[in-house]
Amino acid sequence: MPDMVSRTPSGKVIFPPLTLRQQEVLRFLIDTVEARRSWPTQREVGERFTISQSAVYNLLGTLVRKGYIVRQGRGAGYLVLTEVGTEWYQLDLERQADRQLALPMADANEETTTKS
Image 1 (cartoon, rainbow, N blue to C red):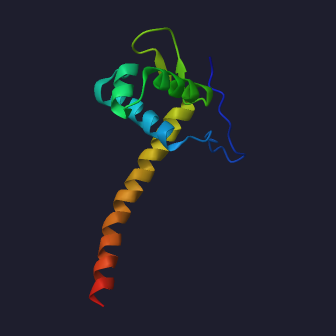
Image 2: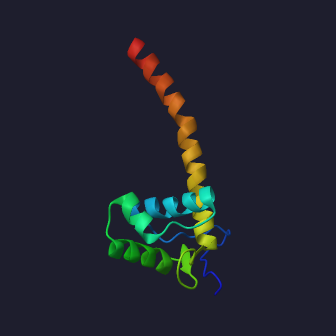
Image 3: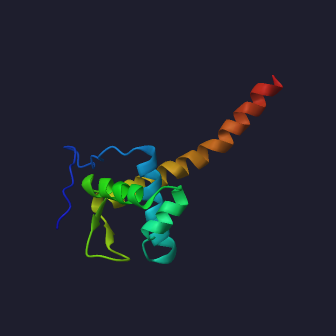
C-alpha cells in the first residue's frame, strides 16, 4: 500500500495535524524502534503514558488514519512507519536540536539582563 503523501508545490510534505499526545506517542514509538529495533507493545505504550489499552488502540488508529504509520499483519512488529512519519520525525529531531542550541543563548541573555 503506497503512502498517500500530500506535498506543497515546492515539494514539502504537508503533515496532518497531531495533538501533543499524538506527537508524544509517535515520538515514543519511533524512539523505541531506533533503540531496540522492534516496536513497543500496546501494553508498553499504555504503561508509558498511563492510558488504557483501548486508548492506545485508538491513538494508533488515529496515527494510521493520519498517515504516519500503517498496520501490516498482526502481533508484535505489525506497525510500519510511513514516509510522512519518517519525515515528521526527522523534522522533529531538527526542531529539538534547534531548541537545544537556543537554550544556552537564552541563559546568557538572562545573565546580562539581571546584571544591568
